Image 1 (tube, rainbow, N blue to C red):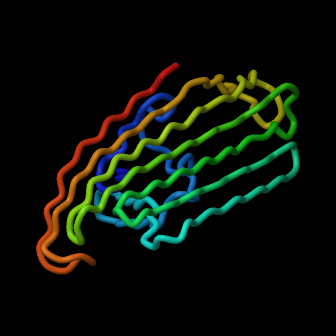
Image 2 (image 1 turned 60 degrees about the vertical axis):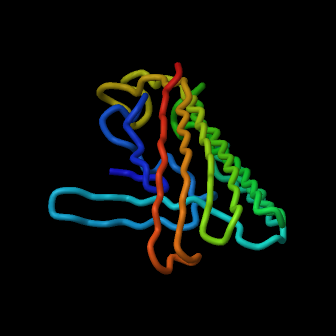
Length: 187
């Protein structure tokens, strides 16, 4: 089970049996906790946040063999009024090693808007959209000898709205949190 800020991510689209955690970029996650239980594995994803009033940004560019490329960026800004904005994007793509006319790519966008009106109160809305695009590989091509790989074109969208009230900031004392999330797959 994969939980993103406490809300379960449901299997959708090409991940219709389970959520493939490898498809979730780490560029906008603050922490990933893994809990191993006797009958289940839980992965807790905690989204990034900027506590200071100083803007923060990061750009990362990687490239490799077979036209493999990864581009990532994040921008975070918090205002004295308690309003905060987090924006991130991540693109990963490349061509197959032994396959002609094969392309795989995933473009991920994430936005989070937070408001901290008082020291122990917060309201947040975040949305993540990941676009999948890879061509089919016929059987008997390269290392794929039996079944081939079907094409996947579509997008997964996840949204979370949460409110929280605490006795004191910094996880001291009691805390109440309520929220809801929604996921969809479009093809």
